[in-house]
Length: 389
Image (cartoon, rainbow, N blue to C red; front, side, top):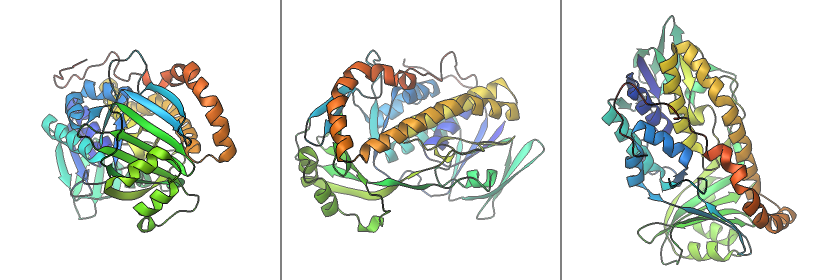
């Protein structure tokens, strides 16, 4: 089976590895010369994504590119601790969430895709695709044309594949939050914990890296869409001046990353036709720290269904198996965003209720997410994949 993958980020690289593992001939077409680069800040992979990486033989490489973070701590703007839970897992799971820079994750996954036998072509932007019989033909901006049995759209929230599949597909819209991030030094932060402060002007995340630096990200609530060029460190310092730890971290900033606007995408009605399918953010950006993990789940499920049926039937199975879980994840992400933009009265109520709620209901509330295993009972048949779990 010949497969074209559009996009060389996390979803595209994971998809390429998964499809190579079942014996497909895979070519990845990426619009940018370097799809990793210094884009974005850090991200975390929860156990549901890590299990997918293990099944694909990529877990060790990704763990080496980042570091384990066993705990998550939630804080009120006053400094009161609201919760202390396992990070990205249930309490009994020995597999630890991994945090790493987005660029390092893309680099690691692309290297695994190439090692698995995928071909990666950069500098080619998809502009058209058409299905004819048992093939799909892709056209790129530079005039290149390619034909395959399957085209996988893994080209992110601004997906060209999504618009080609359905010209009436929804477009992303600004989510009322923007992110500024960077690295600080000279701040005393306990290692092993992912800290999130629910501040007066948005959430603030910080954690200690193995080299003693502090990675941080401010998720600022801003109903009006700002010009990213207008966002600087002085502005962020002013917004978080009343929260003690965020203010201390920001006072020690040594590295500033390019600010980004957060976007949401309404439900995408068309995920596929008989020869083209969307995976990752191209079909369902979820946020809430699960974007990369859900893309990895997509890759595994797509590979599994292609082992069970011909391409059109497999794509229908893929959609059937992913729609409900993604819809639930999107609802959870919406609640997560709302918590970061809460007003005064909502914050006060949350600060009163959350400590008890986290102790009583955390495991029950997240078990659907972290206990789900898309790899259960499955091993790729095209190549040997050593497992560490």
